[in-house]
Structures are given as C-alpha cells and as structure tokens.
Length: 326
Image (tube, rainbow, N blue to C red; front, side, top):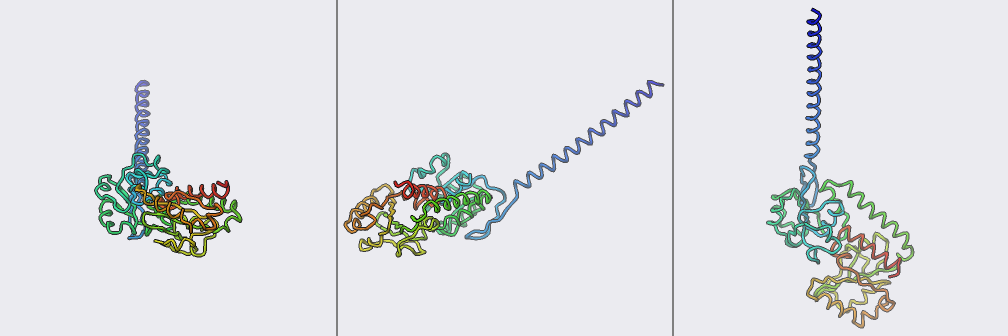
C-alpha cells in the first residue's frame, strides 16, 4: 500500500512538471513569435518621400541604391551608404581621386547626362536617386525599375539635396550630424579668418571653348558666402555665372584674391585656353595677379564634384591659403 501511494505521488509530480514545462515552451514560442513579428515589422516599415516629381513610398530602408549624380554619390558615401551603382565622375577613371577608395566594387551606370537604363535594371536596385534637371525625361522608366526620388536641380545649395538624399535612404539623423559637423567647421573657420573675410574673392573657370566668371549661386560660391567672404561687386549676385566672357571682361575678374580652375577632360583644350588667358597682358595687369594673390585650385573640388566630401576639401584649401599662407 505504501509503495502504491509513493508511486501515485511520483506520477502526480511528474505530470505536474510536464504541464509546467509545456506551458513554458508555449510562452517561449509565443514570445519568439512576437519578437519575430516585431523584427519583421521593423524591417518592412514603409515611409514616404516628397521630391521634385511626386511623393514616393519606400517599403523599407533600401540596401541596393543606384545614384545618378556626382554630388549624390558623395552624399551617400558620407551617410555610410555604398551604392551598388553610380554614374561616373565628370573626370577620373571612372571616379574622382578623392572618392576612388570608397567606390571600389561599385558598378558604373554610365554618365550623369546619359545613364544606362539597362545597367541600372540589371543591378536590381531597391532605390534610385536622380535629378529632375538631368533626368526628367527618363523618370517614368526609372520608377518602373525601382522607387525613384529626384532632387529639383544642381545649383549651389548642395545641402538641400543632401537632406533629401538622407531622407530617401532613411538616414535623416545621420544626415543631420554630417551637416552639423560641416556647419561647426564653418563657424570655427570663420572665427579664425577674422578680418580676412573682408577680402573680395574672385572665381574664374576655364572650359574648352568657354571662360566663365562664377557668381554666388555655385557650389564654391555658396561655401564662400557661408564663410562670409566678400565678393567683387559684379560677382556679388545670386545667380550662376557669366558665361562665354571675352577678354574685354578680364577686368571684372579682379579682386583681392583670385581662385581659378579648369575643367580638363583630357583633350588639352581647357588647359590651352587657361594658359592663353592667364598669360594675356590684360590678365597679368590685374591687381591680384601683380600682388601674387592668385591660386589655381582643383575644378573637381571647387566645382564639379559638388558634394559634402568636396565641400570639406574646399575648406582645407581655404585653411591652406588663408591660415597657413600657402
């Protein structure tokens, strides 16, 4: 009889333990299911981006981005996003020297003016970023490949486009930090430059068959303005540039300091034009030239790249020429 009760008691506790374990497994499975559902919801959470063409819904944070502008490429790299495809740099083989290391393994999708739809489609992107000024005619084709976001234009205010790109790739907080770091650097540099900001800065660009005097609504013009530099009166206007200037306009190139840059594509034409102009007697008679306050700088950094990386490298140049006396 005693053995019977002992045996019954053992069976009771064994059954009770089985119920407890089973209940725990059920709770664990339910928790695991909830966690899985939560993770899935997080990874598939959609967001909407208002841009130059319309409102575009993006289903989740993109992992395969194709970028169709040079300044957009720099924006993505600064945000920690390596594109799967990008348009080639305006100069370089195929990327600018200052981004070449970061672009290893990225597929060229053609040029900014003529991207390859076939190549873009082959990369199976989950986001395409372009520009209305450059790519409006192919917008419908692009959006049939993947969700597509366009900036409005490519003038001087690079920060406006940068903020759009940060939103498009779901990295707005990272974007705010990048811009904040740049603005802090501007503020620090302004304080160091002091009275030197009163110097009038002139900018001249040489291209094959075209000489331009650059105004404020340009990439470098916006940065000079943010720093607080003065500009010669004829350049202190809120538009892009005076194009196709003749040598009679050389006096308008004068200032307390002249920066010039040449867009050389490899045929030597821009360099030949530059040499002709800077050796012209009228150019040599400019006060800035006679006083040695003239500097040739990189066209890709001061103009064509147009992105945040180039902006920081331009600030390096400003520090070099104004604070280090080089």
